[in-house]
Picture 1 (cartoon, helix red, strand yellow):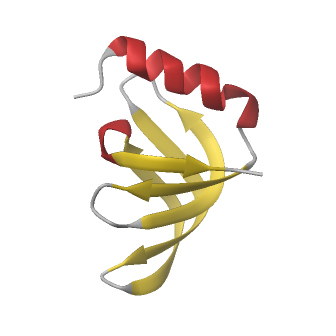
Picture 2 (cartoon, one colour):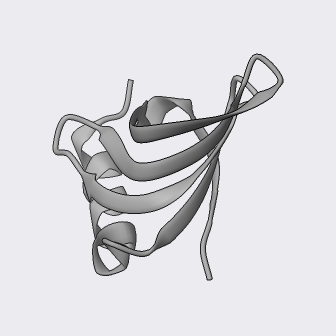
Length: 77
């Protein structure tokens, strides 16, 4: 479980990138690429206009809600 300090660190790291493109890899082997909407205080990363791989197939989603506990890696330009 993500502790409050870790959530605050994510919020500080990503706060200036809100609205920008973010790539996220999860521990479950999934990949999400979308625009960062926000990082919630309860440890949820919210992306919008998302392209992702689910069950080995490319999917499009309006929004994706990812637990920070599941995040393995992040990347942005």
